[in-house]
Image (cartoon, rainbow, N blue to C red; front, side):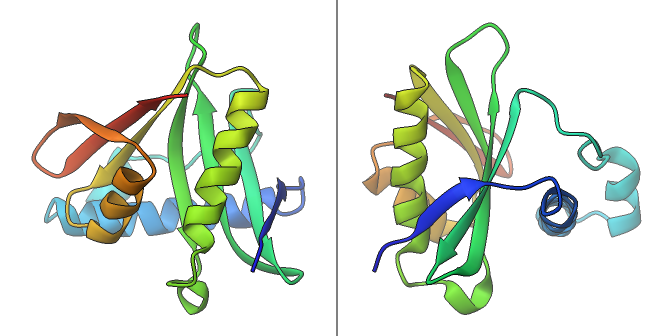
Length: 152
């Protein structure tokens, strides 16, 4: 069972951008006990236009879109910030996230990145466990989030 990853097309970008934003604000609202409308005012969606430091990838398995991931290039550094990895619910618990993380790591190595940081909600135990197994270590913590990082 092997996935393929590819850069999201211009046609796909608006759909995954919207999904990513809506999923994030729902989780943020839940984590912080805030009204969803309050969160929408506080956190604006990503730009309609892609930026050079914002990289979106589609995760495919047997020619089906099973999810996506996104990372930012941190300004002035050879570091990436893993902003989002999302496997659609019907494809979870099949190892796709782990494979996507490993393939994403190869992309970063090819681009000569020196490390990656990821922020995750504290109650996302499945993701935290996966990130730890892949070698990321906790570097920062606040009330609702854990930041993890690793050197490549």
